[in-house]
Length: 360
Ligand SMILES: *[C@@H]1O[C@H](CO)[C@@H](O)[C@H](O)[C@H]1NC(C)=O
Ligand SMILES: *[C@@H]1O[C@H](CO)[C@@H](O)[C@H](O)[C@H]1NC(C)=O
Ligand SMILES: *[C@@H]1O[C@H](CO)[C@@H](O)[C@H](O)[C@H]1NC(C)=O
Ligand SMILES: *[C@@H]1O[C@H](CO)[C@@H](O)[C@H](O)[C@H]1NC(C)=O
Ligand SMILES: *[C@@H]1O[C@H](CO)[C@@H](O)[C@H](O)[C@H]1NC(C)=O
Ligand SMILES: *[C@@H]1O[C@H](CO)[C@@H](O)[C@H](O)[C@H]1NC(C)=O
Image 1: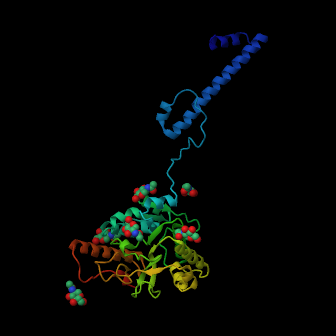
Image 2: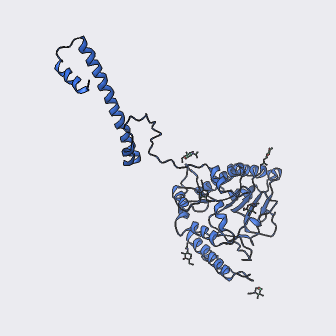
Image 3: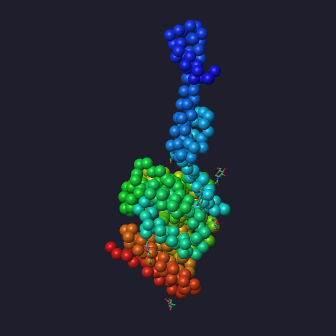
């Protein structure tokens, strides 16, 4: 019996409802309800899928009712890999578990700004190109992350809920101090995960591979604004813009102590606090071996390397004002390019930078 004939019979006999008719109406009701449900079930998921996957899924979809989909299975959000900090460090690390870490904010990430010069230095430096894959860029805002991702670098987005770090932070403002301490905390975590690191500010030009110049016996090795000849001397003027730290119990304890000391010296940044705690007996109790880089290798505008044949890095320190800094770092890269084109030992090194950084 087809459903249409049953329908006609129903209409014909609607006023003569006997026992038989009740059963027929009941059966009909069930048939209609079930087919209605089937129609609903096929139409509804198709609509949803259409929104998610486009027309092809609608055309390719089978007509039988689809199984119930959990909302997560048809979620329109693309599933982007969301790597943890540890995974990013693992991807970037050298065979000996070392990473090169820098931080980046929107101001420095913009084209023709500091970060471009940083990357350019790796390209034109001696033996530095292959180090780029070991660089982890800690991005302090989403614009910096966007730029970093475009450049296919190892990028980590550091969420900083309480402060906006995207602007060009004036040296020693409260935001600057906060940013510096957030950095110390992050580097402490890197050590705790077992990675050694070189931390480099993005205004450090990498002209030669510095790894061969690391001291074999130092846990914590720091650049200097001015170096007075003794690698272990606390009289050297330390600069935290370039550091090598070996991950071990001593360096981790030292970082914990350093980070904790910020509470004793409020409003002071990491470098000031370092200078205040460096003679603390706790440092010798911890036994952390501290070394300072000779500025002939690791230098900056405060004391440029005396020998371009030996220089590894040039930092835009002793320079207030981003425009001046960009100008002078670019001058250093220019000097380097000229030196490289000579392809010979240069007897007397003369840098044209610092130049505008010296202006008041
Ligand atoms: C993924 O990213 C979100 C937001 O960016 C974050 O809250 C979450 O912890 C991340 N998950 C993992 C496994 O990294
Ligand atoms: C670690 O690895 C790098 C690159 O592979 C190498 O240049 C360096 O000499 C090694 N040693 C240390 C102590 O990092
Ligand atoms: C650096 O100087 C070169 C010319 O030597 C110029 O083309 C380039 O735009 C400069 N870069 C920046 C970031 O100012
Ligand atoms: C691993 O590092 C390379 C750069 O060396 C980067 O292009 C790639 O996206 C990284 N992969 C992951 C999963 O982070
Ligand atoms: C730190 O010390 C503990 C014992 O106190 C030891 O088990 C561990 O291996 C040490 N870790 C490192 C990185 O030296
Ligand atoms: C380098 O400097 C020394 C002493 O300052 C000078 O005697 C020498 O002529 C210079 N050499 C060159 C190539 O300029």
